[in-house]
Image 1 (cartoon, rainbow, N blue to C red):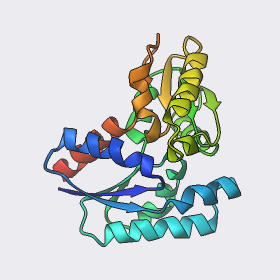
Image 2 (tube, rainbow, N blue to C red; image 1 turned 180 degrees about the vertical axis):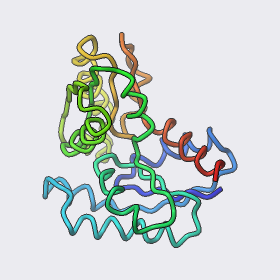
Image 3 (cartoon, rainbow, N blue to C red; image 1 turned 90 degrees about the horizontal axis):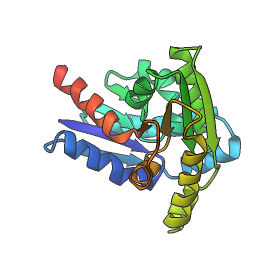
Length: 211
């Protein structure tokens, strides 16, 4: 099995590698990354035509590498799968699809995000599946950059605060970015706390094995 992983940040590498190798130790992962995409998105505030074209270059490289599936790892770019999937024979997986499908079992969903544009993409998916759900979003825009600067302790503290602010007000809490997965081990909540890498890897591997 061979999976192409498409990244916009380096912080997604370890979580997705750990998740895939736990699910299928024999899987071969090919990584395709453009760390300039996040800056473009933060500057524009939306997924522009330039961002779409630049992102599609990564998909092109992955699809030309004889992979069985392509796994996105940055939630802010997930809605591009709707645009790009018809152009490729290989299956494109959102970074958060499996996690969000689990969250849809609940009425009130809390989103924790460290990129301003991420809750837009997640809310679009969730509301598209069930318009009646209630979404409470906590965003501390840009603190993902603390990880790039080696300030993980400060990053984690801010994420924990957002989690605690939501706990008890919603039925489930979703950690929107792969870069926050490790924080789940640092907190205890009264409601389920969902992370994406493990669920995404499982869904992707199940798809490959079934085709």
